[in-house]
Image (cartoon, rainbow, N blue to C red; front, side, top):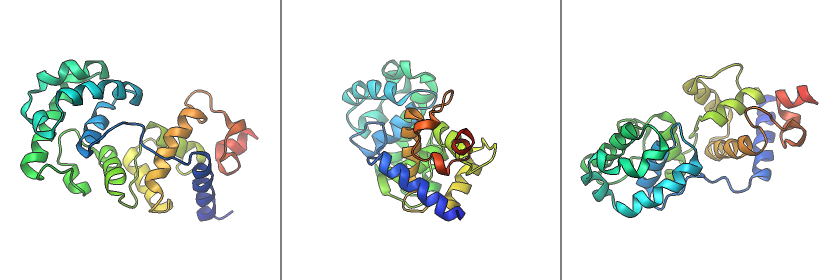
Length: 213
């Protein structure tokens, strides 16, 4: 099977298996997604979703978060880990949104990367989920694991390099949803320690799955 056809089959199979390719982080407002993603570093989405309702209830607007001091919000996010650094980045990113971007989350990689605490993974997620920007590739731990097991990359753990490779091979309009489905598939089937290849929907197209057959 041609490489392009194989990629399309994998994308289609994951679409069928996980029709709703939604970010698992819960957020009513665009800037709240930025905050939730920052909290998710070294932390589970499940924990973040337990923490953010109280944080956003106490600070219901971008202005209220920007007016806070980092130590004011530390108690709300303590259980997410690395809370001091995260609190600093959240407050100063909110201030920057107001001072430099008219209160809006920027719609370009270049501008997003200027915000405290925003790296390429976060920026790609914001571009893909908020603005539906084509070729947005979110390289998280699930994406890294699946990309290697499938055979899209070979023994590669470097997120920027994996991002560049996936951007070349994935259909631009499906890349963001593909990454969300990697998270869903990585949690349900292609787990870190014990992948369930026997019931994997992409087994016949996956290097690891075919070896296990």
